Image 1 (cartoon, helix red, strand yellow):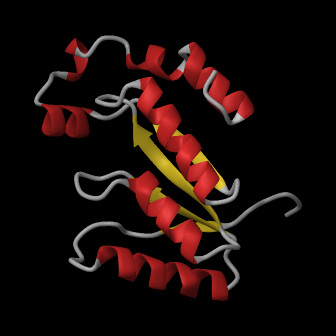
Image 2 (image 1 turned 90 degrees about the vertical axis):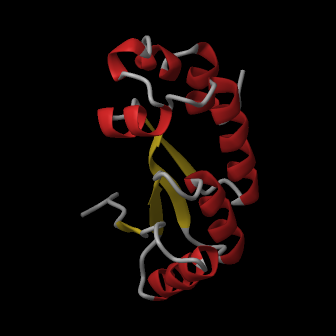
Length: 138
């Protein structure tokens, strides 16, 4: 398939030596021919930070967050973190945003999802729009 990129996700839960283990798995994935790796956000480690570390250790692979929940993160923080990871990885970072799920939002923040306002507005804010269009917060 022309233009298609095949990648994989790496589990970021459970291991007390998570960073070293994820870097090891990323090296193996790249050696196997994969060109991108994706990290989901869980209740533990911060997926953009993991992407930045892996990007420094495995310099020829694209990295991304498969779904970074925006609830609980101010758009300016999402923007600055994404710009930092983008700089650390030499432009190989792909930011995937998510509105969140009932389990994540209510479990992590003890807030009813319906009472959290308009999470979609956070993604479409001018600063987030600038980030997705130009790679820089406006």
